[in-house]
Length: 388
Image (cartoon, rainbow, N blue to C red):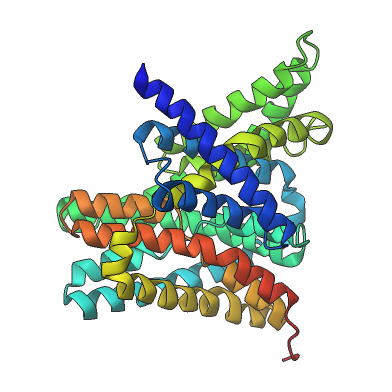
C-alpha cells in the first residue's frame, strides 16, 4: 500500500512541476515542452523529490501514445500524398548519414566493428513527436515543412524497424537473412496500407454507430479503445506501438465526429495529464554522474548525429525546392531520438555488446536531443537567411 501511495505523490509532484514550468517557458515563448522536460530534471536529479520507477515509467509512457494519436487526428492523408516520395528519399539519406556517423564513432573510439554497428543503428532513427509538437507551436502546422517532416517520420519508422530486425538477427545468429528482412518490410508496408485504407473506412462506420448510443462519453471511450488496440496489434507485427497510435488517429481523422467531439476531448485528457507527465519523466531519468564521466562521448554523439541529420534530410532537401529556412527546420526536426534508440540500447546491453556506461550514455544522448530541438527550431524559424 505504501508503494501505491508513493506513486500517487510522485505523479502529483511531477505533474505540478510540469504544468508550472511549462506555463513559465510558454510565457517566455520557448515552448511548454522545454518546461515539462526541465520539470523532471528539477523534481528528480536536482531536488530528489521524485525517483524513477517501473510503474511511474509505464504510466508516463502512455503520454507518447496520446501525443501521436492526437497528431494523427489532425493529419489529413490527402494533404501529404504528393510529398510521399520526397519524404522517403530524405528519410533514407538521413538514415545513411546518421548510420555512417555512429559507426565511425563506435569503430574509432572503441576499435570494435560491432559497437560501431550498434551506435550507427542507435542514432539512425529519430522520434519526431517533439518536432511535430514544436512546429505546431511556432505556427508551422500544415505547412510544407510540417507535412514533409511527418512523412520523413513515417518512413524513418520503417527504416528503424528494419534496422532493429537486422541487429537482433545479427546478434542472435551472427548473420542476416535478406529474405526475412524483405518479408518484414512487406509486412510493415502492408500494415500501414491496411490501417489507412480499409481500417479508416470501418473505423468511421463504427464511430457513426456509436454516435447513436445514449452514452455520449462512448465517443471518447471507443476512440481510446481503437487507439490502444491498434497500438497492441502494431507491437505484435513488429511496428512500434506509438506508430500504431499515430495510424489509429490517422484512420479517424476523416470522421465527421473528429473535430467537434473526439479531438477536443482527447486533447484535454492528453495535454492535461499524460503528455506533460511523459516529457517530465524524460528529464527525470537523466543521470548526471554518467554525464560527468562520459560527457565527451555524449557530446560527440549529439554533435555528429545532429550534423548528419541536418545534412542528410535538411540541406539535401534543397534539391526538392525547399529554401534555406525550410531546410534548417527539416534538418533540425530530425535531431531528437526516442523509443527506438532506447530499445536498441537495451538489446545491445542484454547481448553484452555494450557495457552499462555506454547504455546510459545513449539514454543521456536521447534526452539531450529532445531538449535541444525545440529551441533550435524556434531559432531557425525566426532567423533571416540569404536566399540560395
